[in-house]
Amino acid sequence: MAIPSPRDIMKMTVRQLLDDPNLEFHKKGSVLIFSTPDGVITIQPPKGGKAKAAQTDIVTGCKRGPKGPRADSRIMTLGPKIIELRDQGKTQREIGQILGISTPYVSNLENRYREITEAAQQE
Image 1 (cartoon, helix red, strand yellow):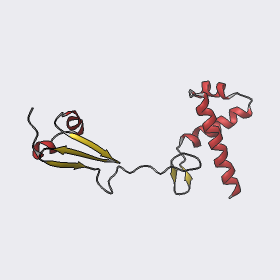
Image 2 (image 1 turned 90 degrees about the horizontal axis):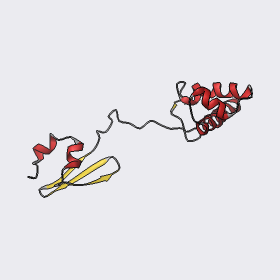
Image 3 (image 1 turned 30 degrees about the vertical axis):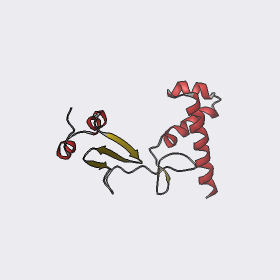
Image 4 (image 1 turned 90 degrees about the vertical axis):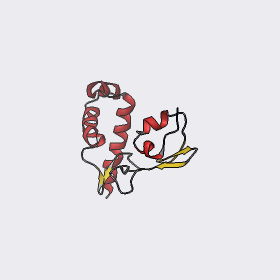
């Protein structure tokens, strides 16, 4: 198989580049570096593009807006339901079955929701 020219390489998808046995590649962060006999090709996402990573709150571990967790996050939607069911005497296993989520996830959401509400009360 012939080594693709730089012009041909620009027309290839990343999957095709990775599958080509004539190209050696390395990954550094979000940058792919392909080594060919003719030189080096670097592919990296555009700066300032839409591919930004979502900010994550260190304490709660959920996506957050400028004033705390987003209203549509799983913690903010399921947290009150979990607390309500816990107040009714339900176990985490029962809550998981009711909400269709795993028992460890119920525990995780419950603990993080309690942390959020306690932090909000202290402010």
